[in-house]
Amino acid sequence: MNSNIEIIDSIIDLKAEKEAIILAHNYQIGEVQDIADFVGDSLQLSIKASRAHGQMIVFCGVHFMAETAKILSPDKKVLLPDKNSGCPMADMITASQLRKLKDEHPGAVVVCYVNTTARVKALSDICCTSSNAVNVVRSIPENREIIFIPDKYLGDYVQRQTGRKLILWNGYCPVHAMIDVRDILEIKKEHPNAAVLVHPECTPEVIDIADKVASTGGMLKYVKASSKKDFIVGTEIGIIHRMKRQNPHKNFYPASGRTICPNMKLINLEKIFWSLEDEVYEVKVPTDIIEKARAAIDRMIAIK
Ligand code: 13P
Ligand code: SF4
Image 1 (cartoon, helix red, strand yellow):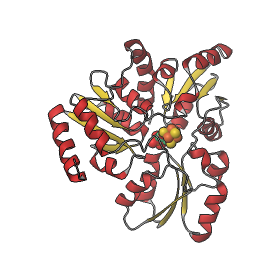
Image 2: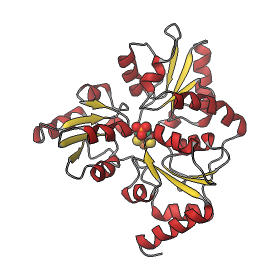
Image 3: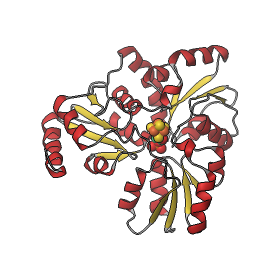
């Protein structure tokens, strides 16, 4: 296969033949976003997966997202086009570490960020994404202790928004942790009217200078509705593809040239084609884990 057009045509044919849909996260490369049936943030993708028709979901994102899709659509074959596409933050807490933490805080409600493995979700009471973490914590009765895992920065943001004291874990996103206040202030000097958008996985210092703190889906909504022309984007740079497509007359400046998630960039058109053709790499989750994790994810989907 020697051109993108040929690959795209073959993907479209295979998709129809296998009754597959392609879901892609906002951080995927432009070509992948453009061929997807739906592009979105973690919560939007989970909702799409739970309502998907057909036989197969090709998930262009990282492993925990494909696993979440499998839990929500257990009868479908869920494929991840690159088996190495993991999320380092999701691997920062294991099921046995969570078991120990729960033993240290008996009676605490466990809120797990969606960036966790299925086994960790199965031990949690309620899952959340960056777009509903504040509302998820607000839904928990005031008299209950709360364990929030694994992202200490998202957890800190939620603490500050809700006024609730959370038991945090020392996890973080290595990509968002690289965003530095000094870099943003430098860009601001050149574009003083730019709105600063940051993801809640950023450090508290970065969050403190933002005009808007939001999930990737929330940022896209904000940009569309804003009367501003310039935006400094404090998250993975893949999102700028969608921002430009939706707002061709607005300008977007990455908060840092280093905010590239290498795992999100592993998937490309060739790998999607191979994935559909050979039905690889199938994401499997044991039935007992699906049942337990599903309860936590269903509670998350119910809270916007
Ligand atoms: P969103 O839910 O905002 O899309 O974030 C996912 C993620 O992995 C951020 O690093
Ligand atoms: Fe994980 Fe960070 Fe990549 Fe998101 S950007 S998938 S949290 S490593």
